[in-house]
Image (tube, rainbow, N blue to C red; front, top):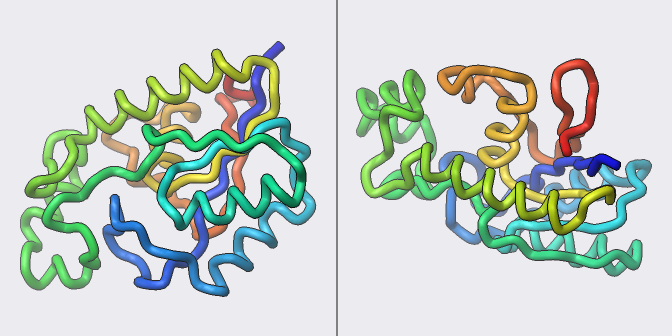
Length: 188
């Protein structure tokens, strides 16, 4: 029996877009509504899993209580740490660090933001966490409340995209997507 996994990106945050990484921003009222709307007719799930950052975990706690589901906080599913770029927007970096930003966009595995987490280490961390979750919750239906970077990594891998195309995977705030392999088979 396979494990069915759905991925929900957190909604809009109080400090807006950009490289939020490990910053622990709260959701805006609109961000809460984005997430509520995404799951309103979705499910059912057996277990909720969330990043520990409040932009994910606060909503996951609410949903777990509402649907009477167990909640597992998974620290290894936190967002990529962007180092010196944390809290900065791409527009801001284009004026102060355009060359480095261009290198990151062109080759995210080959270039790490100053003081940031290398993407290969991020990938290993996320994949190890997912393997553990699939083992622990085998055969169950999971909703993972997380971040764009985590979802982008998992969806690119499930779709068979090469590493250099990772940033082509676009995920909106409050977007709910199934984690499926090519051909429509569920991951797990």
